[in-house]
Amino acid sequence: MGTFSQKLKLLFADRSLRNRLLFVVGVLAVFRLLAAMPVPGIDTLQLQAFFASNQFFGLLNLFSGGGLANLSIVLLGVGPYITASIIMQVSTIMVPRLKQLYQEEGEAGRQRFSQYTRMLSLPLAVLQGISFLLILERQGVLPDLSAFQFGVNLLVVVAGSMFLMWLGELISEFGLGNGVSVIIFGGIVASLPSTVSQALFSFVPSQLPIYLAFIAAAVAVVAAVVVVTEAERPVPVTYAKQVRGMKTFGGSATYLPLRLNQAGVIPIIFALSLLLVPQMVATFFATSSLVWVAQAANFVLQALQHLGIYGLLYFTLVFFFTYFYTAVTFDPHQIAENLQKNGAFVPGVRPGSSTVDHLSKVITRITFVGAFFLGLIAVLPIAMQSLTGIQSLTLGGTALLIVVSVVLDLSRRIDAQISIREY
Image (cartoon, rainbow, N blue to C red; front, side):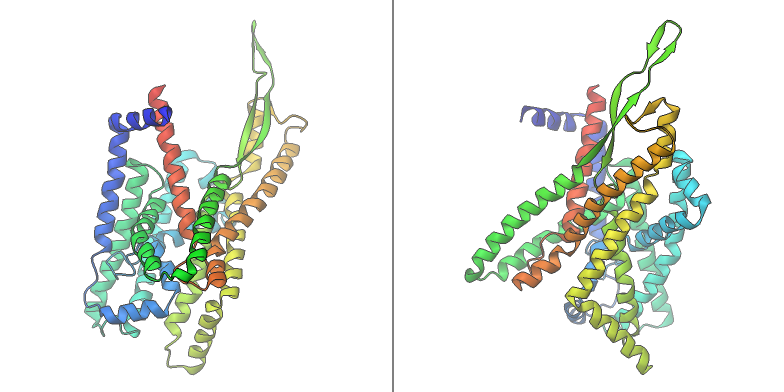
């Protein structure tokens, strides 16, 4: 407790760190203000009915931080940026130059890679903006717009998404944590009061054991998320002794920490973004004048509304993206090469290709555990609703993992900054 109080005191005493925290708070306040500004001409009653009959738009609402539920000027949220990130990450496999830029050219290369991602976000925001506005117009949420009015609304929502992406970049540069994750985190936290009030309003005394079990399960799930997020598999590394002149260097033993969940919360965000694409396309064509197109779109919507099919697809995509993102960000060849250059080796493993094979085997095994856990967390709300039949009890899932991951990341960054200043 004494150490915690000392760190807390140092946190607010250090001017630079305090300014970073205040900057994050200020940006989140601006974001919440934007999320409350609606686009012109909304039919509030039609909007409520639309969201009541379209559950997957609640998932889209996650990326907009509540901006979609209000049809605010940031209703697209950081969705276009996330989609652009997925495309760029996939492109690293097919385009060697992008892989080299992302993994081998250091900080300058990653900055150029991020710049390409931001540039790609603009046309994606335009496409998503057109799709959203047309869907909302067909559903009666927005009135029939003239070409000029449609263009103005499109310009507003695209500008709102780009501005939100810029705020995320500012948080990453001048604040603490990953800006996109922090913005999504802010939207989730802002929705907590309404979620709690909905659960209390629908409370029935006869369901008290279910609510108590839900609270106990929530605590257990949060603890499990923290444990898995922080878990590491240490790979022992020994540095060979080197004689230079009359002095001997090296000979020390350390370890290479391989995280159980190398990808963090990214696989769930990627999977959710990809899973929402067919639902958005099907919703867009559900009212088509072509009978066979409307029938096909409605078939897709009905299939995805089935909890079993939706849960299986969600779990599979999360599992796949965990392996995919780990393969993109963790390069055993480069690590083995760096170890060999620095005179280090894994005890019992020959340097070179044997070390690459050993690291690949270890990361494959631990990633399986991390991917399986992420998949379970992703489909947890579906399981809770199926078991309890209470819609307000949506335990964990994407929102829980994002909140816990962002809090842990902020905690680690604050500890690192404090340690630097103490040193």
